[in-house]
Length: 560
Image (cartoon, rainbow, N blue to C red; front, side, top):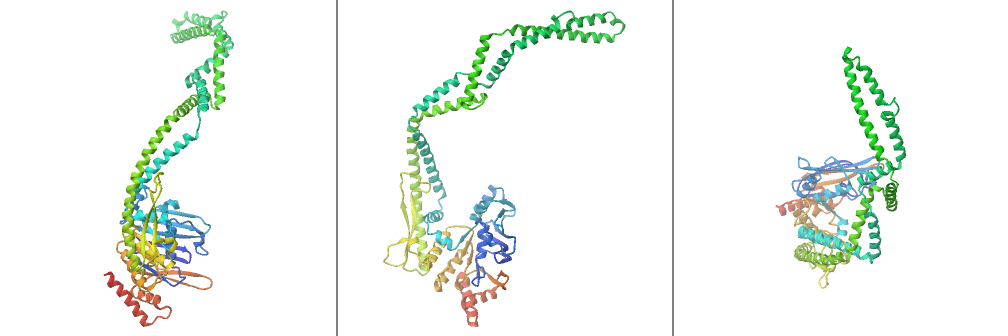
């Protein structure tokens, strides 16, 4: 339920803060005072496309805030919990800032969000009905959505949609495979590529070993020369090689170690160095023996490495990625070779998916027929109360092609109306006049929301084209709706205004330079004056005031 609306620098409203109660709230005022601005503000708070023209002249931005109590909106509480935006106080605060340069920002409970997120949540909190909603009601998709909402069968809708999407997925796969046509040439080409790749060892470690061995053999003569030179310096050269010099050093110290015990440690280090030099010399001799160049082996390694480089260039990858290329080609070849078998399997799967959809669609169709009968009966009863006593209203289900699964089901909906007796019902969009459409639209909205809807509903002059006794019935219907939901109604009809549980008046003031609108909540005396103005215009007599008072008292008696 909407409990507070704050408006700053929006259109001609400089500053306004409204606190709302449950039941039916009436918003009235003189023509041009800006009654619908409150509805417009809620529209922008609900995620409507930003419009810089609504920023008050001379201001940098318009700031709009709406606060809702969530005790009667479990779907909104669930949405907020999923988005981790819920508050412990059980309230929800929506804020929208519209800048004069055309930009906008939105917040939910203090967290910045996109306009689409704002709209998604707002749709769970309130519904706005106005002239645009009446026009939307003429579209068959909107009629279907309204019927499904009235029927309350979301699980059937989900089953039908999921079954249709599954069939469509299989259909796309079938079309993709069929579009490949004769794949024999492609298979032959892939087999050739796969044979080339499978003839080589492509593991990363094997390629690294190959490159290392090739590099060693390619520099074999340089390695042999360096090893021989190093061995000569260590042990096999003239009498001044490292091992010979080390032995001489140890011999020189051997005669005097007894005179200085510290020399024993040095001798031990020289002994260790000698052992290390012996081991290094042995290792160099072994490497020298292995370094004998085998031209045939080198040529084989070189040829293998060249083949890998050629394959890498051919597939435009590094050598270490060739193994992935081989796997990809293998999978594609397997898929193509199995295409015929898969096509046959797809046909069976599609037949099964179609049967699942048809079964779900049939259940949904029966539920829709039941809902259509009930809703049409309820709407017709209200239409006749609204001054169209001879009218007939039907909801027609139009069968669709059941051979191609549709996520929306196997039928479409058409609202049919015969405004006068003796006429066959025709589609609502073709026959309803402006005044009739207002009454029919209101009847549909009241009847459909009797089965459950948003906790807050806003009606923006849906009583256009209605007057007299019919207007009083409209007011009664809105007041009855306000008994189990919060209803806000912008109206210019005293019979409707008198039905409200509370009433706000929008007034305009200003001069040639500045125009502004103000909003005030009316007490009982203020309501009498406002309804009297709606009844009698500018010059209000005592008789008109008495009539206004009588309207209010009558409304209270009826509701009581």
